[in-house]
Image 1 (spheres, protein in one colour):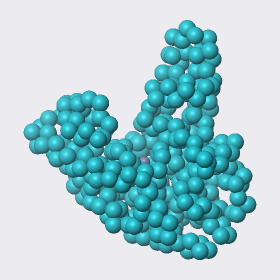
Image 2 (image 1 turned 30 degrees about the vertical axis):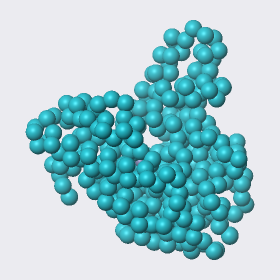
Image 3 (image 1 turned 120 degrees about the vertical axis):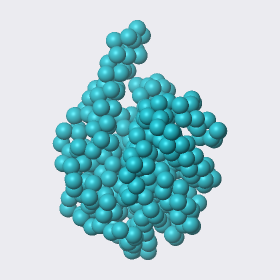
Length: 342
Ligand SMILES: [Zn+2]
């Protein structure tokens, strides 16, 4: 399957897949399944090369060991990751950190049952309490089914034999990915904390910090003070994140706390590293405005579906919004927060 064709296909399939479209840089090491891009000083952004699904992991190669952040979307993807790490270093993985509880970052955890898994106590609570019944997970499964149906439709409609063959190859890959979900047995962290903890590994200091509620109730960032790098998971992208479990009212303050750390590059949970730190301020403004506008609609008794269709955020010209409106999941979550402040 050609790269251009794949990226066109992926663009049609959904934003979350865009994470796998990260451009190769000269510093990248490519294994059979993964691309390792050195961010700085043996801190690697690690992404799957298969055009199926990607959530970022961070592989930190220390003097004597390896620390990993986020375990990928399925046990199968985690096993690929373990194999890929072995291909770049003989040092053992001695700890896994969960940036948050979402399925696409934490459902490879079971492959790390022999080492400490570190996460916020909220992440523990979520992964220990019926995570497979969470709407964000069940919506993910619906998304998988929708993708399969869409690709099948495209195959049926394809007239060019080459295009058809490429789509069929993609369908096979994606079907395999969907089957991999069947073996998920969620595993919560084995070491939790509420504010912060620090790992000292050889000459490296790794700070794991809860900066406040944001994308979930338990996002942590992994901060490397010596290297001025921070891994933010899904709580900071160059644009808005998924808001379905978010605390949009508190998120701008949490991002303000992030800005107090001394760093000049951040690695998000999907997509490429970000060096234009002014993006954080733009996203803060976006969340503040979204919250305020949704609150007005809520106070006026506008139902969530109508609010989602009519809310106008097109004034945020630096944020990629094509039309008026936002996702019903976002507005429902904001309404829920307004009705259940805690
Ligand atoms: Zn997430």
